[in-house]
Image 1: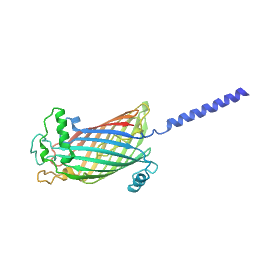
Image 2 (image 1 turned 90 degrees about the vertical axis):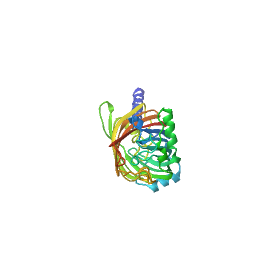
Image 3 (image 1 turned 180 degrees about the vertical axis):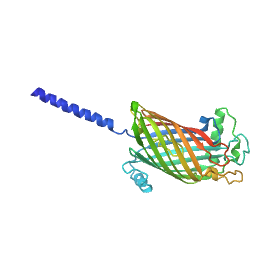
Image 4 (image 1 turned 120 degrees about the vertical axis):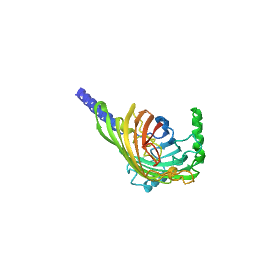
Length: 335
């Protein structure tokens, strides 16, 4: 009888242990408590150097806050954007974007080309992410014009790369304040799991941008295939593009996915194109813009690397080429 009793206890403990392991395996991976991200966008990835030429962003993001004030602010500002079951997180970032004419090596570029302009901004983000949806509210404030430092940054980069100095910056847009409020919602859906454990999923996204940096409405989606799609809601991008967050769920081992997508944007105003009434630039902005992003995301432990190659339709009527191409590279470190 003692032997049977002992065997019964062993069986019960074995069953409980198996259930515990199964529950742990089924548990959603947790968001990293804080992530530092560096994003670099440049058309050198496409052997170009014009229009949207360069972007840099340094960001810190955390998925949760203990501040009751931030929680109330997030719910009050846009309750339809932030999932009820998710905690409010926050983030800060600083970014710089550079725009140049195609004829960048002459002092007086054509008046019907893209204006020279730089944009420097600091941003604060409130976010809430559940297992299947992500909501974001972001406010950025800064300056467009010489005070952005874009001219010095580009000329320094050209010196380091032994390239010719850009000469059209004397015609850049003058200083003016720059503001942008972003409201965005993203969803994550795993559609199927195939051979070798490959997952197939889609990330629809919709957003509104309000401000003189850009006033627009956008929508799009990413199709993804890989392993560990639950680690994020898509790769980060510099605004005003629809963008995933810097935070991610560190995987056990290696997680990865390939993606391709589409973003459509209806634009009512954009300072770097519409704010050119300084007696020199004479162009007409395109009201509709499309982007086709393709790329890859790799994550191992606390490190994630994302690369996106973007094909963008023309942004102004006089632009001779139907498409402009650039790349976006983001390194994220969970601390």
